[in-house]
Image 1 (cartoon, chains in turn cyan, red):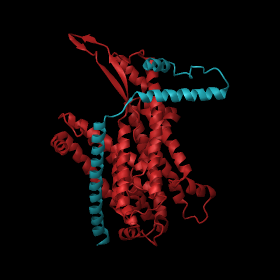
Image 2 (cartoon, each protein chain N blue to C red; image 1 turned 90 degrees about the vertical axis):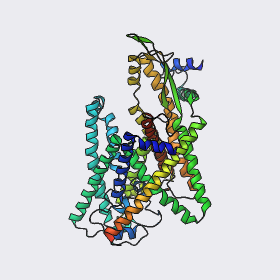
Image 3 (cartoon, one colour; image 1 turned 135 degrees about the vertical axis):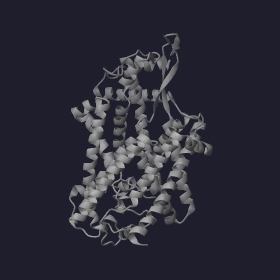
Image 4 (cartoon, each protein chain N blue to C red; image 1 turned 120 degrees about the vertical axis):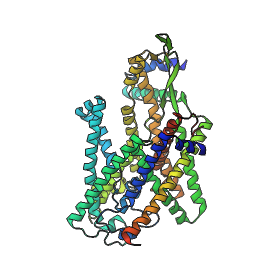
Amino acid sequence: MSDQKTVSSGATSGSAPQDGGKKGNPFARFFRAIALFVGQVVDEMRKVVPPSRQELTSYTIVVIVFVTVVMLVVFGLDAAFTKLMFWIFAGD
Amino acid sequence: MLSAVVRAFKTPDLRKRLLFTMFIVVIFRLGSVMPSPGVSYAAVQQCRPAGGQTNQLLGLANLFSGGALLQLSIFALGIMPYITASIIVQLLTVVIPRFETLKKEGQTGQSKLTQYTRYLTIALAVLQSATFVTFARNPSQLFPGSNCQQILVDDSLFTVGLMVLTMTAGTGLIMWMGELITERGVGNGMSLLIFTSIAAGFPGSLWAIKQRDGRWDTFLLVILIGFVVIGIVVFVEQCQRRIPVQYAKRMIGRRMYGGTSTYIPLKVNQANVIPIIFASSLLAIPGLIVQFQQGNPNPPGWVQWIGAHLVRGDHPIYMAVYVVLIVFFTFFYVSITFNPEEVADNMKKYGGFIPGVRAGRPTEQYLSYVLNRITVVGAIYLALVSLIPLIALVMVDANQNFPFGGTSILIIVGVGLETVKQIESKLKQHHYEGFLR
């Protein structure tokens, strides 16, 4: 049902908002257009599929592990290279 | 999880790509600590303040270069010039008709644009390194609070020219390495190198927090906040609006094709981390301008204004500009990467349609209708996440260059997710199970 509605308003969305867009003074029209837009945004957000709990946890853990590993590797590399540079350029 | 890693390394193609990426990263880090010619290494190391207390103005630029900037290394400029150049070229495609036609030309036009981006990168690199080297001659501005007299061996024109040349060449090399990663490694080279740079600064700044407070609970709290933010970012990254698509059944020869129903996944945050990278590198420019004027004992009014309002991350005007830039770049980048007309055309060609919408132009309109409304939320989300940690961390009393700031955490998680997913899909070409079960 709601699907049907968005589809029809979607087809006409190229022009300005249609429902009562012509009536009233410019201010009222402006705010009505914004209200319509916000309504449409909320409508679309209802149809957004969130990730499942299991998907979310596994992705989060994998990202945390990946970031930690890269962080440690880069930190180690930096420490080693800095020592090397000291040895070469500062004779220490 | 661990077995997946082992399997990733057992797959010949993937192993090659992973090792190649690591190799480039190692070179990148080596170049980031190697001093430019004419710099006295011992002096620079003495001048560098201990424990993450860096120059406020150069904070973001230094963060993006992974600390290389303040070491005056050969990769001091990092990929900043390349990012700035690609922003400029992308923006110019809208403004200059010739660039627009090039962009529409497809493959050849695109490679022409890439070529322009590279030239512009070199030009910007010359400019930035010259600026930077100029005030490296007077190190007390570079490292406020320390009493450094001299970090260059001599400041003859030859030495300065050599440094500018070296840093420019370093930027060119980084640019090439980034493209090599994209081509022959895993993930997007440009973002992966930024990712490494930011990750390089993490342990030091974390440790600095622990040192300053001398307590473990603040430290752990900060890490906990970091994990929660990572979780939230992953959640939104995975949110999709699925637009159903039906494919008509058709007979080709004796085989039946199509008749399936799939969907076009539109991510809420379709633009990923690019808007953040663009916005924050643009906002780093005022800081550099101010830095350039710092030797001036009596700077002009506009420089003072910029220094007061556009440099420190906790000022309201800075935040407002940042939010506006992020929202702008989100829409801009989505409009560049997702072309509803092309998608609609392709669907029509292969006999697909969205139930309830006619093929062709109405489909195109419907797609851009949905995309625009979803991107509103995506843009607001990007702006919020880049601000919330800032506000939260002011409460825990950490400074703005703190590593878990919104900018760096969005980049870290975004790039991490993208890279892991790419490894995953490469792994799936050979084995079915991946990291993400």
